[in-house]
Image 1 (cartoon, rainbow over the protein chains, first blue to last red):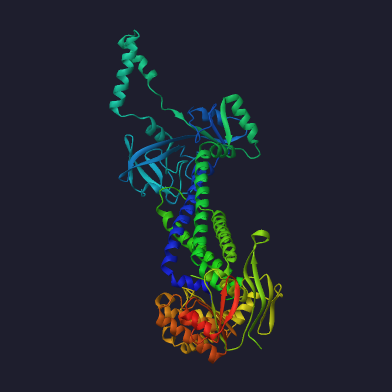
Image 2: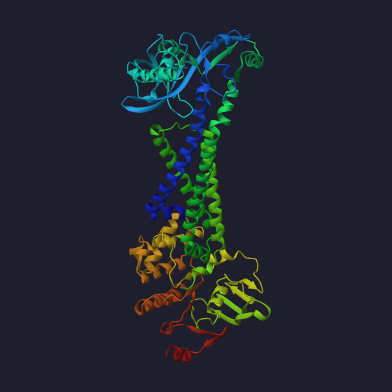
Length: 397
Length: 236
């Protein structure tokens, strides 16, 4: 006779409610795992999915993703002339927020040389890559756009020609790819009122220091902000070229910072992502501990509730194996069923979750093993208590 | 051959100046089919004696022989005490102590299955036993849905499940009203007569000692046998 199954069948409502509660907690643990890995995956997605050997950025900066970086646009030509460099392409990268598909959305614009340059979208999930020099865009599906949609950015409308899947910046915002000049225009072009206000302010400043109106008119273009800057130069090397030698040359002669893709990745992991990963990791750890404690308490309480029955079983001569099986089976049933429900909940939550969830099978397995271990340890504690229960507890009133 | 022979069994708790002799050397024997009452006030040593002959509490000295097997002789004799108890002793408790998540039939069948009976055989025999105890119609009920008297009948069924030679009943009528208590005592008498089990009943309830074959009295740890007149006087 399987006492554990009998007990569960008699108290099925209570058991299911317990499973539901524990499962929700475990689902949070599993989703937290996904957030933790998703944070890392988002953080390095652009680096991992940009086919480049070296990232050349502004001197003294760790850009262009971990930190801002600004360079003259033509600097890519100097880099291209460096021995060992096969190709060098300018890249523009900045965050924007606009109303798209009816809602205000934040995204990152990637401007690249659409005619054979580096840094464009790797795999197009739907539609095609940008083929025209202007007013075409490739956007990530997350923005809710479809090929053929038109999006107003700055003073122009851009046609969506292709969609990517899962292309995100370090914060998990979707990417929008534009041609380099379009990206620069969207970044720097101001509307007419803003331009007029800036022009008037500059004229006033010049007149205040004694320039005539004619002189001021001539000097004005020098004071307006230039839009011909880029954020990085992407480099692919010639076969057999030594990356460190090329990097040293660029650093010493062109006064830029140079990072390999691995170094760029490390910058992100040890910089911007470290604190967030630490926070998420801490919460994840705490949740695991809380879950184990709760499972342990439930298993223990389930046993304590039956302590008189256990004493009776001992008194009537039931072997310890019967008592051990009763406790262990219930504990395992609770843990396994809760984890299964939690897994199903996770799968149901993931598609609509506002952040990227990245699940590693190994991590899920470790979480399962930890929870199972916690359940087993709790059972052993309960068993220890049960086996120490004196049978005479069953006697008397 | 006596079902139970207790010779000079005593129990002392603690040692030195703090030692308390809860049970002074007690000697008695119970024959097959005999119904024995064990009376005594609280703290007189009844529970100590009951636990000792239940093989739960190890006595300090003496000898216990059950069904011809020496189980204690100034120390356990090396038998598997729990298995021996399961095969040879049936228990009836004051609070019935049925397993709450098992039906009446399952409570009885569990004892049989613990002793190696198959699921089917145990279920059949449990139903027969409940029929003998006139409670077969409640076989599929959970203890919570049974009255106190019905629960006690099921508990008696569980005690008889493995046809033990010895049945120990600890205050079996304490939680019942007089009418139900009388019926339970009549049932225990019937069991002793018809099934040949020796039944030792610990009771405070002097109204229930009618019909016992022997009545023992414990006072301050000292066991003495009451003659019929004395037992009547106690009852009166």
